[in-house]
Length: 313
Image 1: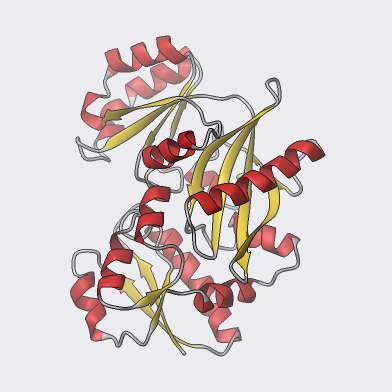
Image 2: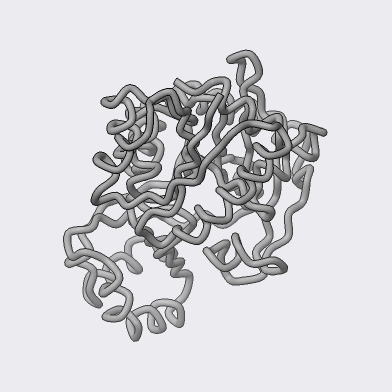
């Protein structure tokens, strides 16, 4: 068995990918599996990958666009490479926040109400209308991960701060890039990792996330000491079980392969759990949530990696 670790990419999650790849390399070394690192350039990947035999199993350690959105999956399938994680359709549906919420709505699973807007249309008058409509709202790119570009507006002060930095914020994105406007739901941030055993998905645990920043943003996710994780989450047994069951149901709906991580928000006042996002390629860094939940269940990191390789399609 030979493994090619696909890493890098040209997006905001480049460093996260390199960190994930590093952890995977360590695991493969322990498992005594032959592997090579492959730095991905999205512009030349289809040509570059052909330098390798398709007997290699491609371990997808990319994060963000190209790696998670179905693009690399399409190329690998076309060239008959086996690869880890979910297929093209599942990856696309999970990565696109609008598509995922539309799918969830069909199954009558609660998710905050939302609308879509192009980056170009985001201006002061538009944001003032949104503030009036929702009072509190979330703004985030439709196709981006690791909370990149996430803004939470809960007060006039938040809005004024964002308006002052709006021109700088917009320069980070293409004018045609789509953004999700979502009604803000006050509550406890929860996440559940799902791991398959003999193709049977099972939820590992429910983690409660408390960010020491105002939001669980990129810094809080990938910088030690910027967030606290409580396992098990400090919610009732009834809601804990509901989260576990809901996560497996969502994993099946999206037809994810081997693993996924689903994010929720629990509104205590309403006693309701809302779906936020699904991640078909959760981070595998030493600060990532899925490995942490696996450890809680006494599942070794190496076993997760071996499971992904054995389920490569």
